[in-house]
Length: 208
Image (tube, rainbow, N blue to C red; front, side, top):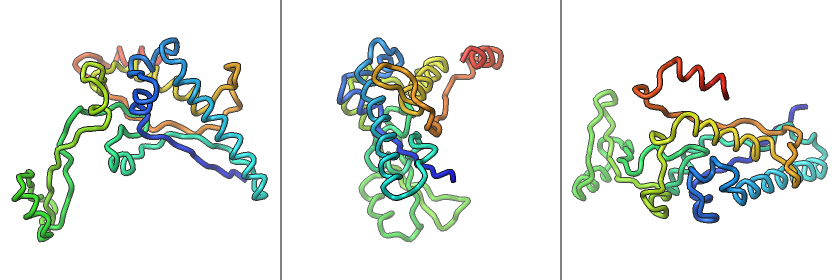
């Protein structure tokens, strides 16, 4: 009765830069990044069309939902991409990977100079730290990169509203909204508490 699917994306920021040369600041301004948003809308329409035609071919109800943006943490990490719709949390960082304390790889990594942590809570586990840099930081000039801590809450909300417009709901070729067959966007908004208090945050939510 409520057949549902959720086509998602990951590495969105890398795609926007590699394909169109758009930064995050470009993306949150529709007038500066029309080709990206037009492509996203075209992808959405393709998902809708395929979901309908395939459901009919299988003799099933057409899915009530068809697009989403999930966290995509595991898949994104494999390719060092920004996760889901998230901005990169940091430019470079140590990724801690947990091993069993007697795994021979732990000694090998330690010999190679990787930092090691013996976990106290889980006394049979050891964590190895791997220096990591996202693909975005490799392909985009450092001055153009916007991390989650750099973007204001208002900018992040604008980003989410545009993703909802073009990917979750979608628009036709004339820019009119499609029937809403989207799910939701998984996103963690970052902000600096020393720069925005509860009153400012409440005011911003009311405007959004």
